Amino acid sequence: MLNFETYSLLWFFGFIALLAAIYFMRAFLGYRQVTQDAEADYDYKFKEGMTDKRLSRDGYIRAYKRFYAPRNYAYIGGGILAILILTPAGLALLNGITTELWIYAGRPIIYAPRGFVWQFIMFFGVLVIWGLIAYMAARLYYSRAPKTLRDEMMREMP
Image (cartoon, rainbow, N blue to C red; front, side, top):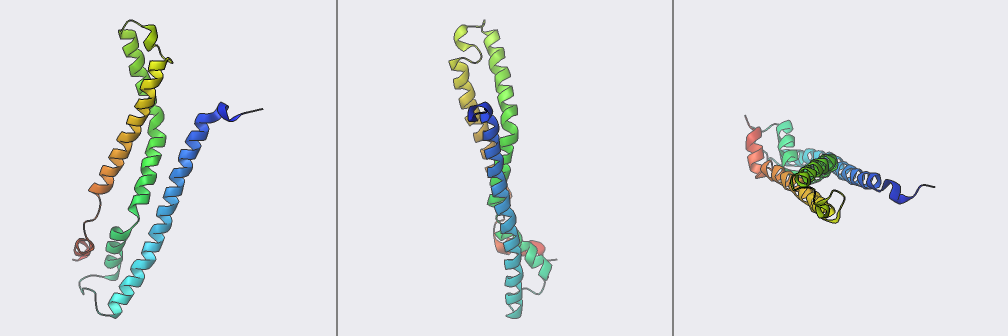
């Protein structure tokens, strides 16, 4: 009979993939809702004479979607997906580095691969890898964030 411990890493990666899928689904549904909101907002403002004549309906909707879109869910999902993809590569690189350092140090038993110190380094290495990926996702998110709705509207005007 198979037990949970046999495939624990696969369970972990499956859970992470499910979490990424949930965030991508929330982003997808949020983008659909923002599109409907943009159309309704434009129709109301156009009817009330509150829109700039230089801005077309499609331009207004694009600007509205860029500003109000749930980008955070998409970036969180992308960051989680990057963690899922890059963790095995990062661990392989870290394992190679620690093994080479162990060989270079004269193969002391206390630093041997699969030993306590090695496990300590790998554990904190995973945390560093995840932290760097989250940092890069956050930097990307904030560097591409729209400043104001007015700026987005001006960008759409001819």
